[in-house]
Amino acid sequence: AQSVTQLDSQVPVFEEAPVELRCNYSSSVSVYLFWYVQYPNQGLQLLLKYLSGSTLVKGINGFEAEFNKSQTSFHLRKPSVHISDTAEYFCAVTPGVSGGYNKLIFGAGTRLAVHP
Amino acid sequence: DSGVTQTPKHLITATGQRVTLRCSPRSGDLSVYWYQQSLDQGLQFLIQYYNGEERAKGNILERFSAQQFPDLHSELNLSSLELGDSALYFCASTPAPVGYTSTDTQYFGPGTRLTVL
Image 1 (spheres, one colour):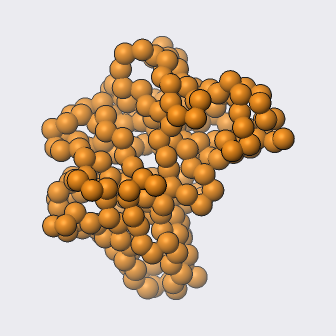
Image 2 (cartoon, rainbow over the protein chains, first blue to last red; image 1 turned 120 degrees about the horizontal axis):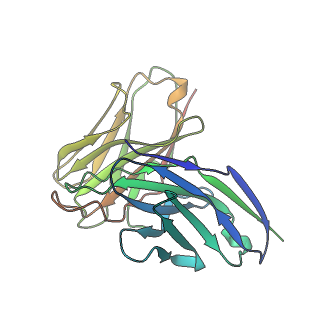
């Protein structure tokens, strides 16, 4: 079975400051990793995903994440945040097996609050 | 706009009642997933359908059922509703034919907010 732990439930940060949202996962099989963002009163939108290859993954809106297999982590970073980045961020995994049974297993979410 | 539509946006009902939530996947997507987002349980996978057939089940209660129709839209039926069923219910879709690996992005709809009074 897989599980995801997002280490911070809330992260307050000032505008234009860097931010890191932490995600650790547990799995006995290989996994694919995702970060989704949920803006207030909206659905989830994919920020980026790691499938294989380079461990540094670049996504939309200036976000990037680094896959670290030895530490089973997939932390999300942005060098300079904007007010508009205020949202809930979810880390998710799916088992890397074939069959199309790719249910997403989500972490509890991290609420990023960007202050002026 | 993800291309996934869900209706209704909001639903308020009473305990013991039955409701139906509807999802239309992106054009051409064959797989539909249902998720529940609640304050105490977070985001949880409920069930997946592929081209009309149930493919995977998660933490879905026996009071809940789903189906996917020939036009690929899906419905989630919730019966004997309890206060704890109040949540945001999301539908997601992918093209994912059976046999492909789980690398496809899941595109989420805006959700249906269910309030049980």
